[in-house]
Length: 99
Image (cartoon, rainbow, N blue to C red; front, side, top):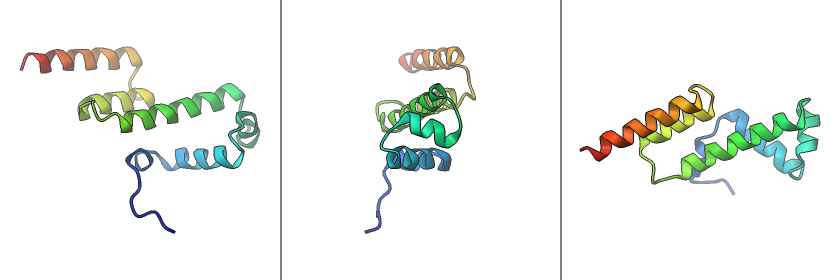
């Protein structure tokens, strides 16, 4: 049976992330096995999984405004450093309180 509606958390992931999730499931969630498959270290696999988890959490966080979600996504994808992201979110929240 085909999926008629793709969940938001899934549609927000990149193709590489979805492939990683498939490999994770097929390997019964063994990060050691995934490390062997990808030819990387366990900490590298753990970091990748953590980033995917963060992406999913952000997409499900309906309390955040679109701008804040964008800043968080940029930080997770290492397009923006974490300290700068925190400053931008903090300043944005200050301007919203002043409205």
